[in-house]
Image (cartoon, rainbow, N blue to C red; front, side, top):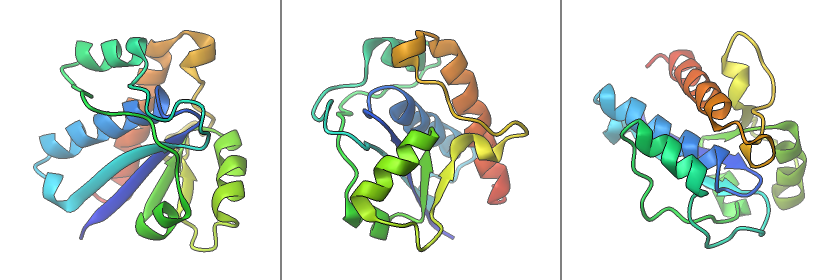
Length: 151
């Protein structure tokens, strides 16, 4: 089976790119990269074209993960049609996606932390400054998702 996953947050410079590259690493470690297409996007236009925020980039690099070349982009209606799973970081993302694509008629949208034992929003480190907490949530959420699909 092939999985097309789009991670989404507000600006696509912290949480969603962290999730994108963590998930890419996790599927690579399992030898499953060929079965996955993984990307990330924003609900806003604020950061379009900007690279991953330096503290997020440093957190990834500290764990041997490169996000070189990643720049923020906004989610589109075509993304909704294309991806099988649209995994969001918080409830605000859900509301903003509805403005872009309308209702989630195909039940593709889920919260990352819904794949864990303690569902909640992933706090935005842009505001909290706590990139370690975001890293921990992303790790747990990605593992939970892979477990939920049997990988």
